[in-house]
Length: 242
Ligand code: ADP
Ligand code: MG
Image (cartoon, rainbow, N blue to C red; front, side):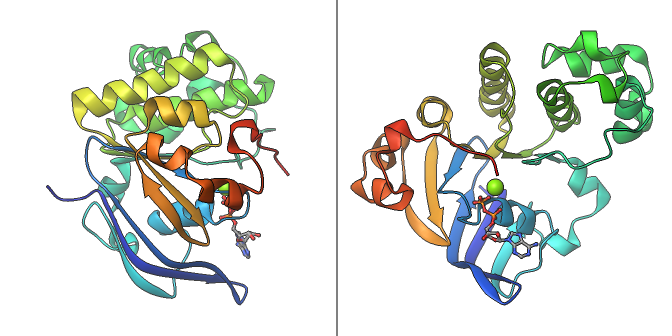
């Protein structure tokens, strides 16, 4: 089976500072790999390298069998990406329906398709709301709906559930699990929620600029090494946004 992601000996330097060094990662269809590590470890940077948004100094990177800069528009449509912090102009005078039509393109102009897209995250009621009226959590649900809409083969999720209520969060992870088992989707998910990680991940990779450890959730979450990296007992780890 061809891996969806293949990273070997990756080195990334930003502003002259080494951010990632000697990182290896493979992700196959039907895997949900949790990428964990403390703040500033380079998790977001790694995802952005995979998307071709951050250049790398050396190493091998293949996503859907291609180097990131070779990914075509059609390839990118097969990658669902939920970025960590939403960065776009929240003041724009758009309705959610108009935003979805603009992002998803020709095949999604019909209202019924948009409703189906939002149904996946229990957010149909947001369709006719202005984007600027959405709360952070509501906006995040719309972004997740977009990532899931185009039948992706690969999901790259960067702390996707931040700001979302618990019920919707579990519904979302169940959906990811459904895509994994029914459609062989592979997912790389950055999460600090270790109960979610142990419930949904098939494998856990911990990085702190370098690869720290990797294994099944049961193996990794009990490694003493992990507490060392996080600086305290991982069971009580809480994520703080800067
Ligand atoms: P994580 O997602 O694990 O919290 P990041 O990948 O966001 O970590 O950041 C890793 C390190 O890289 C941090 O020290 C951050 O300040 C630095 N960094 C991230 N993006 C840039 C950038 N565009 N230019 C310079 N440094 C960056
Ligand atoms: Mg991050």
